[in-house]
Length: 496
Image (cartoon, rainbow, N blue to C red; front, side):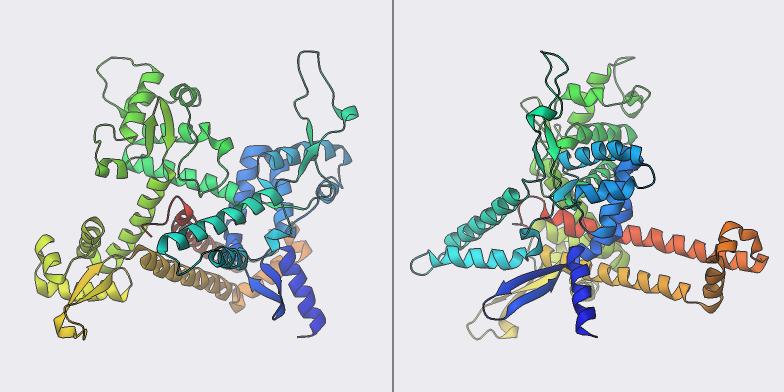
């Protein structure tokens, strides 16, 4: 490739936030590919749909335009969208303000183009250099936490731009008692990009709502949806371990009047109030009848001082475990799931203990453990009885390394996404399909598809059916990727 072409490609990738670049004293300017940013393209359609649900067609058009261009300034956004209808510029300006103030769009800063991994390594090295003598595990952990906090603080300070106070002559007062609603305005000199974390919270909330419906019933899912909606505006990222507090009254208000919550519960009274039914569902989902570690691990919310909190960390951990068990069942049957659950609940065990507790014969357990290990669903821990580490005098304990298992599953899911994309491309490259698509692209056929023959319409219909099936499969696989990768950021990482 020509150097000019390479430079143009790099500029486009940087504009779309797919490339990080940094300057080092040893090697000069270095480029790094942002894999997760590239894979996020699979959710762009969902982001545009979500923006339309929240802000109408104008919000969807703004989000789609920014996704198409990577990052844009407010004047460019409004001028491009209102080019055919100049009177609509005020509508787009109001919608843009709502998107920015609600954190659906965030400023594109200089720090966002540098690899956070490089900065984290440099900050950790600076903190470790302050330690005198041989560092202990506690000091190393504190150095990592300090570096992480410093990096997060820098990012928050850099992203604090975007809105600026209105000039005094532009602030209008409706009356002496009421102040102006909007005293801030969008900074036209800042480039904005889509905040994926904010949109990902809606995907997470939908998964939690579906999980509550599967665990209990539809009425419980409605209460969970209202609980999540009560704190929706304050949810900024999927890394939050717990939602902000809300009240039972706020949840009751958000439940539609035409939804009958009494159908999901057996009550002693003939007609209970909505507030009492909401309290019953909240008590059910918080496992108040089971105040044990097992009950807490199965809960969706927690009730503290008459406040309701959604436990994102607990639910996310359970969703990831469900994906792991689903893969184990698909590949190794119910016996494989039994062994995985046993090791997750008890911990490290040898082969004889597993066979005894799981009530399975040794000749069945041994090959099953080997098969699970080959798929990286379980791992072994060697405990030698002598210093020479002789295998004949070594205990082999089986356990589930969640981080290793989830990483292996993510690798398989990425390969599946690649295979789906290649299958879609191969279907489109079929000679018969390619000819029909080329004919449909003609201007006369695009206006009147009756110009296509019956056989061509059948070929086109069959191709569209295959494309729809591949898209559904891609969305299901991408949902599993979201659970394993994005929800892995929730809370602490001690168990992963």
